[in-house]
Image (tube, rainbow, N blue to C red; front, side, top):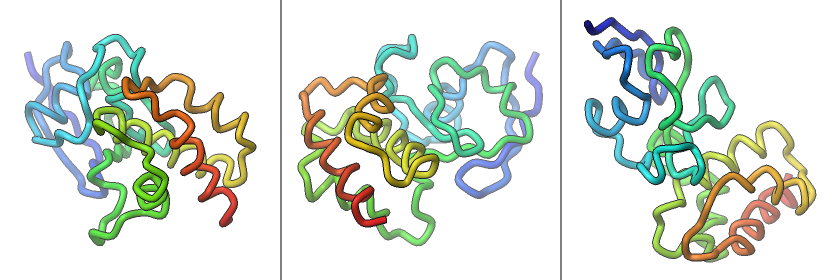
Length: 154
């Protein structure tokens, strides 16, 4: 039996009927067409599905959709409302912080969460914050370089 979930997605109020067993990842990708949030491991280990929920990074594959009632969710598609890249997205490009791109949306979302919480992290703090995100291409140093470039600008 489906229930109505009312939440804000990328700044837009949404009402969607969801089953109690559906995850946020399922409704984002399958129901709403937001494919920037990737399905990786389906166990919360890789970070490819990370979104911001009320400003904090959260794994969409582990989040039951109905727990988001009244909450604000931001996917990688919603980071910039005016079509311009955020400074962190530009820094990822400038520093070669993605290879195949599969982890990039989760990495960018986590970096946004980090920089919102701590605009001037040390490299070690950034490394610890990002530790739950896996990059199968091994671009970890480039990702940290991108984060530190933005931290150095603030």
